[in-house]
Image 1 (cartoon, rainbow, N blue to C red):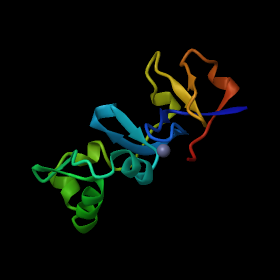
Image 2: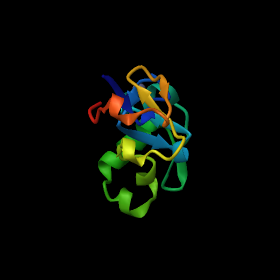
Image 3: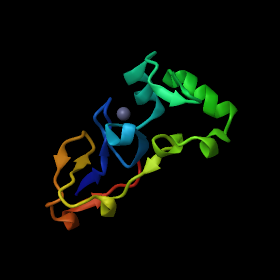
Length: 116
Ligand SMILES: [Zn+2]
């Protein structure tokens, strides 16, 4: 049986079930490592009314957990989990190497892998 995942990593292209969503779904990352490698030193992460690099962002949230209550960053960060039943009609799923599997597939032919 082929394992499938709801999201595909923007950086490494692997399918995954738990990760980071950036910019309302423009980008998805399976790990902080992939997000960091993709954005390197770009100052594109909004926090405390300024844009910082991903490294700076991680440092800020590590020092100040309350920031999740003050800002809306948890909506794009916070290692969201996705599940097959959440997929909308017509939305694709992905296999372990990121190949698209469309929602028209027979779900009973697949294992929904909730592990990374
Ligand atoms: Zn990745």
